[in-house]
Length: 44
Image (cartoon, rainbow, N blue to C red; front, side, top):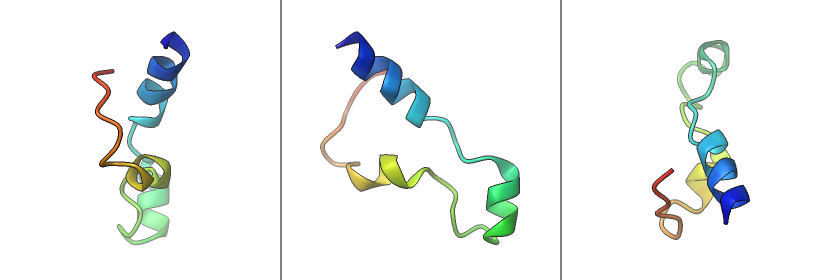
């Protein structure tokens, strides 16, 4: 459970600014957190 919380806290961070600039604002959030946005409601 603790590992899941740590993983969720890590994946919650937003994508670095240079990636957003490189993709011209196309990638703004981590694709991993977008993949299961409906299933994971962790308060991390």
